[in-house]
Length: 319
Image (cartoon, rainbow, N blue to C red; front, side):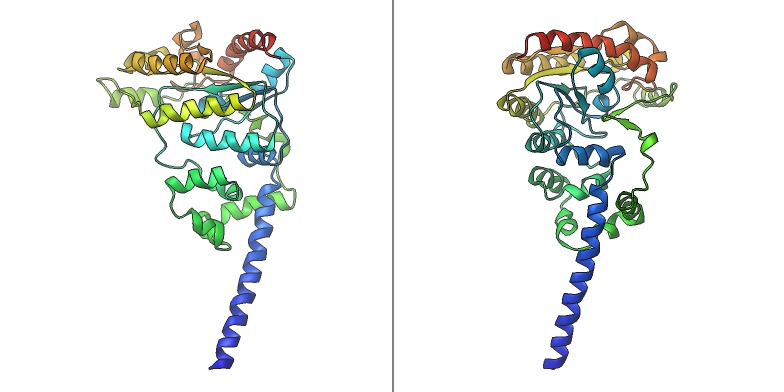
């Protein structure tokens, strides 16, 4: 019996050593990726960004703020860390992680929208968080939504039983430098969408003939204040921005004025400007959008000089 237990222990230790080594190697590969979402994550945690102007928010930040073009117009270093499918409660730990590894920006542009004031109930593209679970703010935030994340962090290779071969394939690409860096869909974190109208809004409106209301939670209002305060405590100026939104969508949002009033109130309380671009002329025409919430490439090119002009004014007043 003693011999059997010794062999079992030796086998278990050897198994942990092998699986732990493979897990560490694959994680290294994910940390070496330079494209798409992992590329943005890795530049963040490796302290490679250090932007003068930082754009933060949801997909409406990621797809509306052309960091490189805005940087050229403002003569600054800009970067976009907008996260597709995220709400404020996931954007806050992302910002905290950024500030832990990079110098604070002169200006933080925090995007807000009609669903900002409700918390996340699910993780969009959940495997993107896997290489960064050792970042305490990230781990706490994703564990609140996905209680099994402790297994991913502490059990070797468990994450690959959950997310399968695609995640391992991405790791191997990073490890052996097999990425297509020439066609990275994210340029300084910005995703340019060369799309025409996709029709999803028409289906949405047909399913909501009486309009739609958006939730406002005190929890999310408090999170927005914390985002502002976190940046201010690092010496950054903060500006809240509501990017262009299709006018047709605005008209069917029943409590839109209530949501906008909440943003204005928080901006006044925290002494930050609130720039509302949802009333500009391009919001009246579908040709500038591919759905009700997101500008297409042509729309972004029309919006870019507008936001750049506002930021130039702020920079002139910022040390």
